[in-house]
Image 1 (cartoon, rainbow, N blue to C red):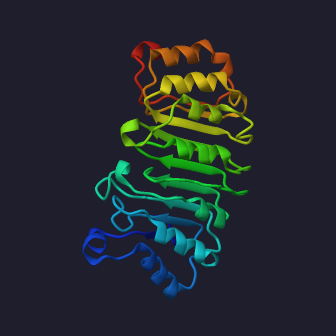
Image 2 (image 1 turned 45 degrees about the vertical axis):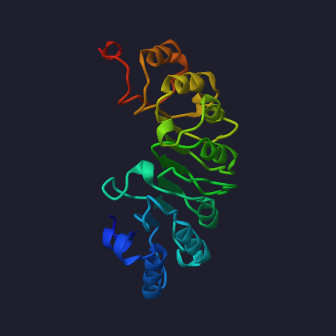
Image 3 (image 1 turned 180 degrees about the horizontal axis):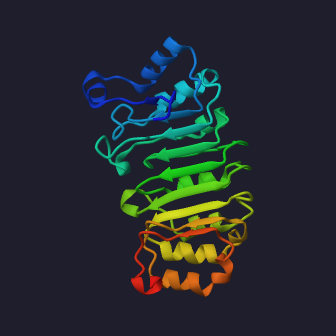
Length: 254
């Protein structure tokens, strides 16, 4: 952990035996220190995160936003698999947090119950969503959000068993430059429809502005890689194409 950055979390005993509420731990810190002056805030395990959404913590942060005067980076859900599997983490609508702070970077782990309803931020440059399955409602929330400064968008799509309930139609809007005019990094990754995503990106009009396209950790097959080779002229401007840990055979990489 970087100097002066706090990670607020509950250990097993606090969460399961003592009934501690994470919002109360944050309050205790602020009661002692007055303000939280660091630019980065890390939120870890809240009370029984596999059963409970962190609504109390969201409300507390929003109600006390003036006590975080320098906050620019938020990691929400820095929870290890030993504490709670990522596909079990119960989340909530985080738009109130985004809308209340001048964040530049947001990382969120855990997709169950996650939303970004009416999200608006003129400062947010990076969003990363780490999930076993990202719901189509979350995808729709991001597309309809007002994020004029967004440059980096990274979404672990996941699978239907863990929360992904969309189709390629829900992902196509991410391939349109009108929705993300300043985007430089597009990560549509960790998907079991990676070939379809690859085809949609190649058919979309966002590629010319991108520096990095990330289709890693999915099921990209030889068909998907063949598409990338066939339409190489569309991706030749990229500084990086990430197709790491997919299902393509070695014949393409000799």
